[in-house]
Length: 309
Image 1: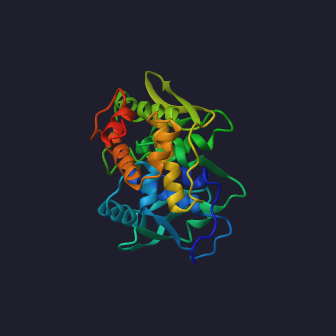
Image 2: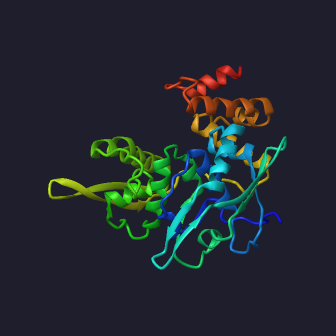
Image 3: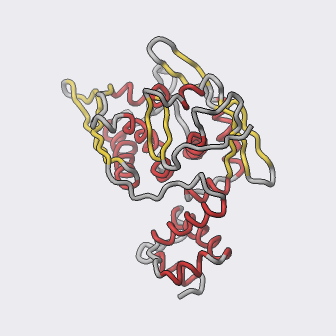
């Protein structure tokens, strides 16, 4: 049966055992998972099928994923083993049981592994909540991961102190078995390519403000902790509860606002034109992927390209 209700459109919840599980996902996989999590409810029955609309996903995230990328991502989510250590048990489990693509319809039907379900939808206690819009806005996979982690501690104000080995294992930067080479072994590289990028993105695009502290033991850094505070979110809710066309219009309105196009008659003219809306989403994607260079006045460039100025 199809999922018939959703959680709050801007909040998803995830069991802390999964938040701290050791795993790695690509940005495409994370977008799929965040969409899936937004649709889960505690009333869902075993075998519930969750429908992801690809066009809506791309419009809401501002990123375009092609068919091959989506196939690879769901295949990885089917096959990758998550290690969830609760202290009393160690569970090896995959997230998805199946993924069905409806060709020509632009939809993916996802079924989660039943062993994973309690960690995703147990909302009674021991959960992490984080905002879906913010999660989508993070382009770095490490930022997404650290955002999840920081959200677990947002009510306390600071995370526990993690050894660097533990922290790197959680981000899949270091294999605890030693079989795979360690990534960013130098602390300067870890800061430059992981911590600083993640901190900047989280502070700019989410409802959290974080900073990290590296702690020394002797003359070398051995551990890390994060300080976390909540800020007033600036993003609009992700409208998963809306029909596709309504969600598209709301996303388009937000894109126009970000471009500085706010004149009511001009906004209305664009939103009433299917051609202008499609051009807008294409423009935003090209702008975010540096296929269009417009550092000074991107809104003006869009209007000029559409013959509106």
